[in-house]
Length: 184
Image (cartoon, rainbow, N blue to C red; front, side):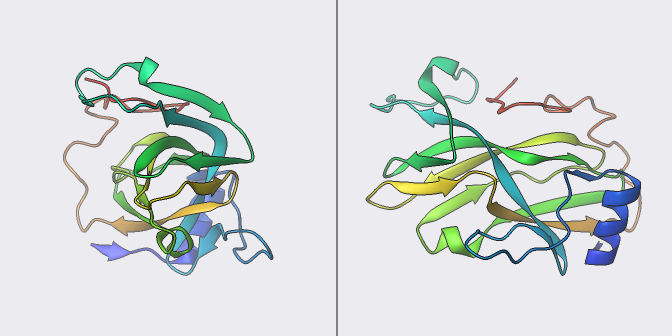
């Protein structure tokens, strides 16, 4: 399994529409960087968020989570309460090739503020907007900026094609268009 380069990512974005919209450059003054990097792509959040309502429930059960536990919010930024989390959606829509797996890591700019970004791998042949879980581990509110970089995606090509892709198994998060709560 090998890590894919910026040349490969650029080509796949252009030819196979793997990342839409696709940002070629990365460094922008006054903005948390996003776009194509040497061996990855820094994705952005859109302006839509789901904030866990206060007071927090006594239990979050992924098999029975109520949408009422979250407040919908839209804006240029979102404040995450101390020791809590929000859900967000990527600005980019992804179409992952059937021989590729991605891993996603939070950006260091946010990590240095106690912000952890959790995104599951994009499996072979998955497509959609990514739902992001963004945690504030700190003792004070933390600010997340819309339409700026939030996490880096690394693309890995398998030595052999997988036997069953995400599309083949009809995964429950295939082609999601909005922030998606856990599904069974």
